[in-house]
Length: 569
Image (cartoon, rainbow, N blue to C red):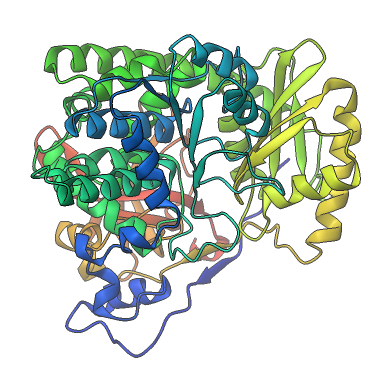
């Protein structure tokens, strides 16, 4: 299936500059993202939504304090958000003087996600008085009931969208529960964990534990990493958390594991960006959870020994290379599958399955295909005989969890279980229902989203004048971040002459380009672009970034799309 060139739109912005004495193009970029006054990019910790405004924290810290001298067991998730949440709680509780704390993470291949019945049985062997879930638990109805039957109290902390019924936990802390008035619904699991530990620290300070109120802020590096890696929307509150976390990393005030991951990634800690967290550090920890279990990733974040941290980081880097190899093979098979379709007969929801696929990698394949086909994709792998595990990725304007809920409500037998967010979800179905599920998925999209845009339109921030294609302006763009999901890194378009081009590495196109109508030239790179462009002039969709190579910094265009227009010849 060949893609057409997508339609390009310029983002709408507020013409009146209410942002003060800042560069007009920067003001336009911020305005297009809803920032219209100075306070909305003043990312200081005091601007966070008040800790006391997140519901149920009072009851949560009471139950934690009740068991200060008893066994407390943290139940995490097998991704970066789960790993950073565990590390945050383990470190904060340790600093607060808790001695009997431990954690477990379900192996995704043995127990699946969340506080399942099997996980509760495993947890029981630790003889805990209190279970604290992080980044999971809101859908663990049976697991929570089982724990309570064993006489174990349960504190659920989560950020995932709840279903119609809530678990019978002693306390639930989740900004997305019904009637919550907390202003930041987009906290990651580690963000919820941070608020919990901040509330506990304040209470302990009031009771005389000097310095306790500041403990949680020591670990904002973990909060930044988990928030970016989980691709939650970077609303103002999350931007404050990430900015403050990055500041700690850049000043080397972070856990040894993060420094080790930075070193293993070939980055400089004092120049680290949110993009580095999302594309260099996060995938290495995630790779462990995708291929085996995430224990080594958590160990990396928990150790205070620099040599152990580096060993963990190197091992995580190796696992990530293995993950990349598996993913590339699965992607080739997925792309071969969709070649049978044309643009006119491509399903509204693309459901794909291969018996050989690795269930820890299907989410990445779904994400790649979603970008390629401009529609929601659900990729399945075999979980056990007759049972398929699926990972769904969606496009803007289509709430994937709502779609699954609609299918499950109308056809209860089709989906065994599901959960997730607006843009990503997981589900389990019986293999015998795969074809029927495919049909219903597209049918429900047609019914629920009759006007959804499948064109893959690209929204850009206009053109950069050639005078601003400089390292100074690239650094200025960086400084107004953090950029990420829902607060997209600025992207531009423009027409350029191709001066030089060559394929570098395995499949990257390195170019030297010059703005049409000027004599200013600049380096550009397009990743996963193996073919030389048979034109001397092109239109590029790109990001302006700082490229660090062998100790030298320069401006570079990171090319997202290359369009060839005949009238440039």
